[in-house]
Image (cartoon, rainbow, N blue to C red; front, side, top):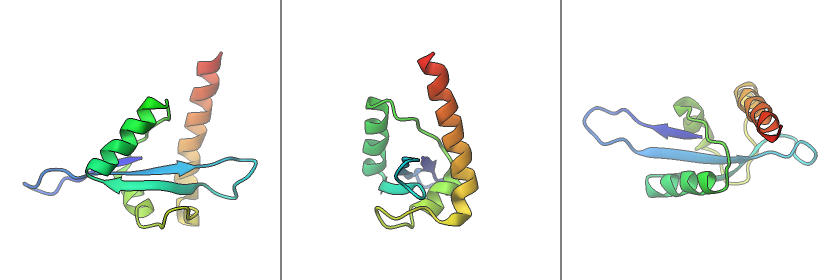
Length: 97
């Protein structure tokens, strides 16, 4: 997930977080990477190189970027993250056909 800030005349600072979720192992998605600026760009580059879906949501990135690495996402974000994951799962199933 990524965010670009719109703060007046300042250039946008890109933020990104990376989530991992394995339905058979994890109770909730876990944040496994985060960064801003060049580090965010590297996370996005790596995701693209490995065909990992990317979703842009500035509000969600703001919330998730406050987490510590390897911390599960907070319950308040379950619904929105579940919607994103459901979309990704559907897309992957359609791609595999």
